[in-house]
Length: 369
Image (cartoon, helix red, strand yellow):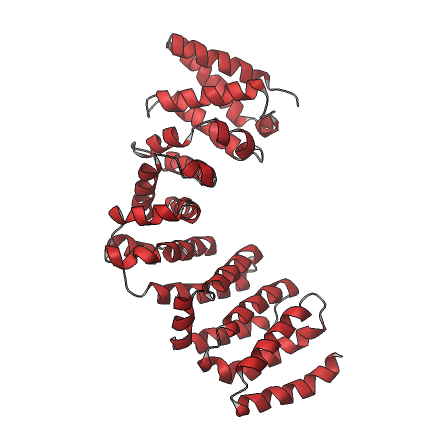
């Protein structure tokens, strides 16, 4: 790959700057950093070359050793953020250089909104590799600051903080229990009342509530987290389907499927009075939906019926009526058949529902053959 000439100049200017911190060298260094961060081809740079390695070292030096109000420091952070977008970032940059500690130190300074967002976007990348997090001493600084940010009213800061904290907790279950010292009931209340209607934010809130549920009562958290999680899951499923956001719809369906394997949530769903109401909303979504939406909705319905909720038995005929037309479609017919199998197994002791389903199958299946 062709190398960027300004990178070699930047490396030499950084070395020169730390030998003799003059204003002229500082201005030149700032110029080279700003030029590098503005280039579209920085992500095409050869990340495994010797010069690339020198670039990472120079950025680490600048981010680690300059004052928080330094323009040069924030120009270096911008270059680093740009590198975070590169697909080779984890393979080349993260394993070889300890960037989490200096980035964590920036969190404890008095940041502007733009600086907060920049640091949080970097943290989203840095908090993904589990092998780094497990031995990273700066985690306590990061998690306490993320918790503080989540309780603010800065919508984008809250969203990115949620995502970073979910990354950390998902990768390191031991971290969850260490959070008891900095999480309070006030945090849980703030988390459950986040004023952001974006579906991606709701999904992150769901995942964080779920991950932190084991410590909620120990820190005076609300006793009804399971109810909140189920309520938000169903409502967000409807929102994602109505807006056509397939990736988010799939993520919610997968999240719900995971819940149905947990005895606590199985017991809760079986006794939750609003389950029939929520299920009817999901059935309504089947009408007029395209194939991609229907495939995900069928996964959700299958997970829901697998719990065998007695209160849903009267809805079985309605469910079967909505899914049967899709048995002709090669893409989703297997999913329909799996749901039908669950329906037959669950209704065997209710003759009224049984007869309704048999009549529906008699009427519709010959047409579908």
